[in-house]
Image (cartoon, rainbow, N blue to C red; front, side):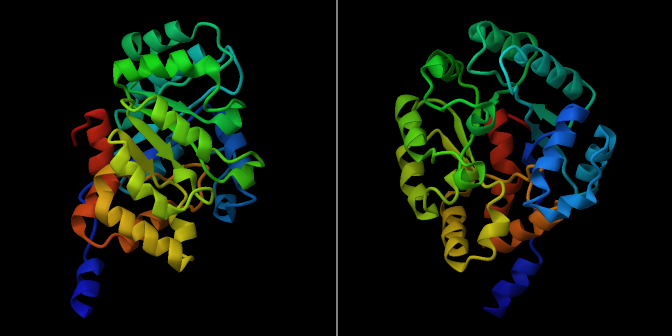
Length: 290
């Protein structure tokens, strides 16, 4: 046991790729920080007027070499401008791996997909049903997900913490989504936490080989709940090649985000699992080399 403890103390990820970051326009970043402060007091230490340059400097200081960047529309008609912003931002920031988005109320969804993936070269799509105000199984999105499945690009969608959002659980919609689009490279952000037991995920990962899990915001909660921590440790130990680390920066649970890196090291039982969740899985999904 002492040898294992000593070995874990020497563990560090070879690289760090953050698979869940929100660098957006100053107005949206400001709103996000204000929104998260009541449940994440550490973010009182991050200025509402923080600049993009300061956000990037913090990621660099914490050793983050690349990151998935998410920026999604809050209402119909914003998607094209936001996707253009993502392209412009990534052109000036080689560490950024930019994801597109669209709104269920957009009229030109297929054109938005083509523009985002072909002309702008964005790598995938991110959706937040709770904040964007639509259901994952909204029939307006069926053609969207069918096309994205055919294009074989990754799709990330927010799940979990339904009580916090005062919304119904997404468990049923998520299971139905996986059944409907089994070939889609699907990343379930936040793992339906508190709505679906962690112990249910190994079976679902075996059943759906294109399913990936994003453990963003789980680590602080699981570190203080022994049962959840043991279940997450088991899941990472058996399926780390299907699991991604994310910070939700600059509107996550802990700041500075190095605290989350420490929790990731603590919960991993071996170096391979740590490297998988901290960079290898994220790189494999988007074809990124470091």
